[in-house]
Image 1 (tube, helix red, strand yellow):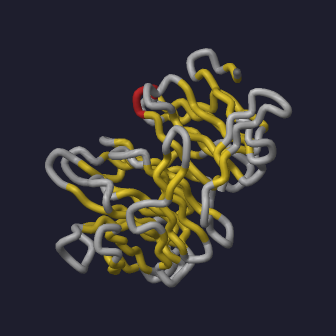
Image 2: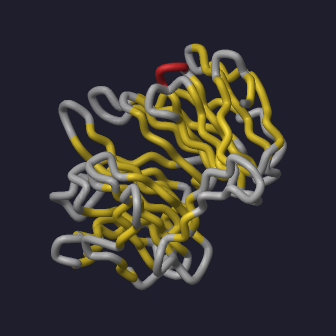
Length: 269
């Protein structure tokens, strides 16, 4: 796994993190509590690194194998535990302090997405599976507190309170309101010809960023959740919204280049 900032040929500042996964990385996410980065992989591993300005060290519990391919992962809000969505139909919680792994959710097919919801009146785990279901779990109970049937398999999801979006195998997007409890709002088409692989929700700008398998990037501006495609970028990349939600970060897969897309101006820089 490599972090980079290519400001020019021969001036690369790429830094490879130690003890990376042995198979494809399914998800990468920074912690909001510390300078920690998490990576999950198809080899069943969850890896956590502590990032410093001058060096990289593997800290906390370091690396854990949950025993099944991990299709998605997410930080617990306390920054000391990690949720994993696994191909063996379960979601697990890795407590990095005790280094213990416990099952916290169950589907009838592989679980593709896992997201934590931190609402003012409740907290729960949202899981989406290839069994065409979306479930919400109270960590105090082994059964889901709420569930929705999906018209197709769940391929991706994102949560930014008070909204959740779920992308499905039929290239449609389902929108849910989370204010008092999870409530289905509507289904909107992605407008993309290829299968959507991931979604990033930017609520401040009513923007949904979709990355299909073709490598292009679709930007959907949702006014009252009426989808309007506002642009495409033909770049094979991983996208994340910036903290101020005014830029979307793009890391290209081929040359470790970091680029930005100015949302308001719809211009790549």
